[in-house]
Length: 298
Ligand code: UTP
Image (cartoon, rainbow, N blue to C red; front, top):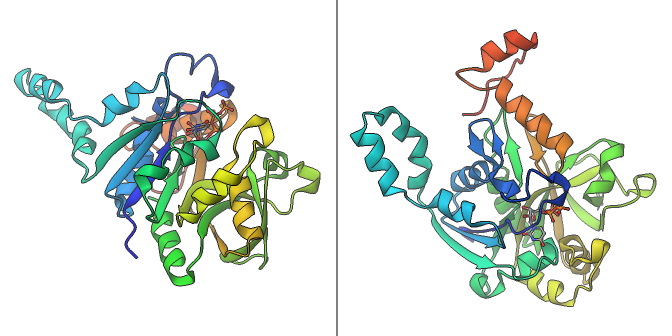
């Protein structure tokens, strides 16, 4: 099955990043030379997505503006002899159609995905969190791998997971895998933000999902969970309990997830992307006396 539709939720308030996010979307925060959500869109384009539906909310129009074609800016750059900057706008020409739906009440990630139901209209689709960059030293193709697994296993959902330290596990949805240490595994259960002492594993959801439309039925029946929000993890748990197949795919060892949702991981992303910058990275590395060995992602 060809899946070319991705839903990108960007309606969250970003309260953990206040005051940075008081009047700008966290998905537009700069990391390296681009805003976070641009990395997400470029990754989705590489993995064959042709349609992106942003689930937006109050204060998020900067995202819509960013993905518009700004003809005035292009003319200005041409006419003022600044053609060299035009290359930085090439992302505007990705072969992607953009759509927008509003999440009118911020009732959590599960609710944001539910807002896409009418648009998705019975198709299988990808969900990519607008505040999570995958990659850095490798350009991530994990969504392509996940779609292959989805088609090969006739699963209701395929989710990517990353191993995280015990002290961080309580921030994420966490898998109980059927096969330990496997690259691809079946989920016996998934728990939202577990107590680290009782977490079923150290495999945390890493911000990318492939879903069959049955997820919408599960979301409709999902009561408010942790934080008074409709949790996507709880709906996935419901799918498992109904006996549907849910598959986990581990992130490859050379890839990382940069969750921009809180300051520690945001700072990590800012520093690592700056140090890996193609043009200025070597000077920064010299300045800070650090070395990196991998080839940076462009
Ligand atoms: P988070 O749960 O990290 O975002 O959601 P948040 O609600 O903005 O975080 P805090 O707790 O207030 O700091 C991950 C992704 O899901 C989107 C966010 O925009 C982010 O890209 N999201 C979250 C929604 O679209 N709607 C929501 O109600 C919640």
